[in-house]
Image 1 (spheres, helix red, strand yellow):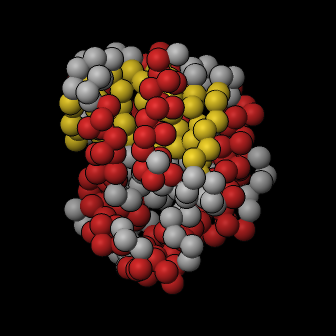
Image 2 (cartoon, rainbow, N blue to C red):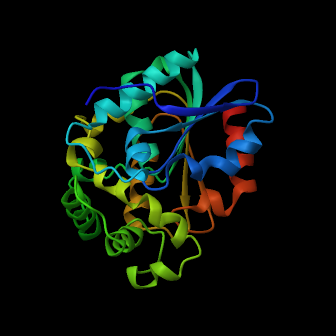
Length: 263
């Protein structure tokens, strides 16, 4: 699979900020925040290939890699005439932005990473917990396959979005999650594991705001902690809630984000 310009939406005027979504629902997750940000900024929402095709019911392509994801974002910025921007990414979007910032540091003014799903970092440190091992095996087994509602429920538990898979169908967002479940079949090992060493993280020199929820999965908190330890310029924001804490506390998140990019 070759990189290509991503589906995108641009609103507002002012300094550009690019919003990269998580691996399930895609760019719709950024909609309410983008509306507010576009009052003072050129706000770019992108829809990664795995979200676009997965949400359309297309199973994962083995040729989709972290490099394809990275270079597709670069092509999109070039097509939009965005030379340098602030970036915010949630979950898989945060993982993708770490890779983008390492490969193209001159394009990144600041980063805001909400619980980046960069579990390759824990593997690289020899800190893989049983939860991380289970998540790896689960997602890699889904690569290129049909994704059932039971698979979706298990993912939601592993991602810390529900307390247990048995309770997933009772969550208010269940019906909005179901149509996007095939996007999970794009999380192959080639897609979620860039060819990087943990020591390279020190090369991300821009200011980074790291965000995590109070009751999120321990392994996601650990990824945030490692990034805080190894990146030169960081600030950590803890918000009440789980993996979607920035959506559960939109005003507090946007206040911190605006302060971060303004500084």
